Amino acid sequence: MAWFTDDFNKFFKDLAKNNHKEWFDANRKRYESSVKKPFEAFVAELIKRVAKLDPAVQIEPKEAIFRINKDIRFSKDKTPYKLSATAIVSPGGRKDHSDPGIYIELGPEHVQLYGGSYAPDKEQLHKIRSKIAADPNGFRKLYQAKAFTAHFNGVEGERNKVLPPEFKEIAKVEPLIANKQFFFHGTLPAKTVTDPKLMEIVMEHYKAMRPMNAFLKTS
Image (cartoon, rainbow, N blue to C red):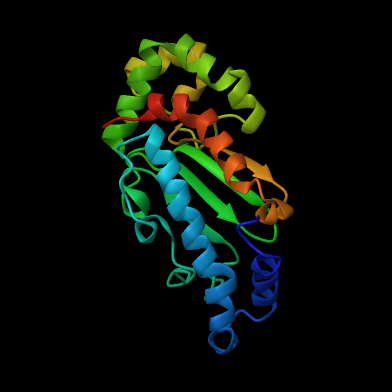
C-alpha cells in the first residue's frame, strides 16, 4: 500500500497555480489529509528505520519536517508556500545540521534525496578538509563506490578559490578538498511519491550514503 495518494502531488500542482493564503485556507483540510498527516506518518517511520542503523537519531517528526511556509523576507518571489514536502532525518533534525543525515523532498516535479554536509561552519570545514588530507584515497573510494555512484551524482558544493596553505598540495591530488560544501543528491521521478516501495527506495539511498556521511561527520 502506498504512503501517499495521487492527491499529494495534485495538491502541490494546484497550489502552484493558486499560491496565496486565501486558496490555502480554503484547502487546508485537503492539505491536512492528503499531505501533512501522511507525510508525518512517513517521516515517523523513516526516523524509526534510520535510528536502527544510527542510534544517535532520536528525534520526533516535528523536529525533522520543514514548514510549508516560505521565508519570503529577503526573496523577490513573495509566494508564501513551498511546492513540495521536505524533511531532514539526522541527529539534530532541521535545527542543527552539524551531523549529516538524509534530506528528503517529495513533490510533483521530482523526488530528491540528499546527504552530506551542506553548510559546515569554519571549524567543521577545517575538520573535513583535514580528514581528506589525511586520507585522500579513502575519501575518493567513498564517492567512487558502486553503491554511491548508483544512487548519487557525485559530491557537489561551492569551492574556495584560495585554500589554507596546509591543503594546497593535497588539492593537486584531491581537488574536492577545495569545496566549501560536501553534499550529494539523487533525483527520482515524481511518480515515485505514490510508489508502494517508496520507503524502501529512500532507505536504499540512506544506506548508500552512510559511509560518506560518516566520513563527513565532525562531532
